[in-house]
Length: 80
Image (cartoon, rainbow, N blue to C red; front, side, top):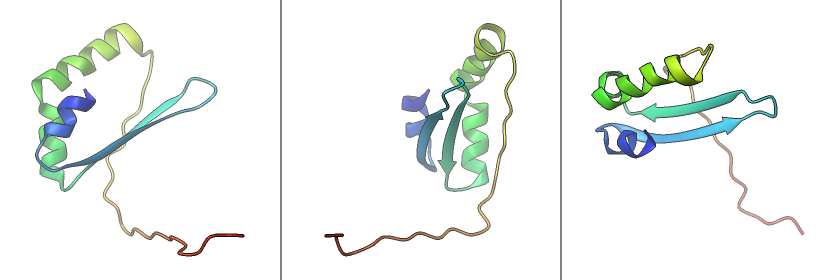
């Protein structure tokens, strides 16, 4: 699915994180809600969701968010 998501207009990035207990998180970012909606409705993505529910997951949760604020920090010197 990652390869398909990357081709979607408005796609920004995706990352997957795994915990030691097997819990996984995939974070997919799009430029705007319309792009996210197009991804949600993409036929191959819809089929993958169905297969996930029937063959892989006993439960999952989905959260769609809009960032309220973003900050970042980068140091320009090296510790010695």
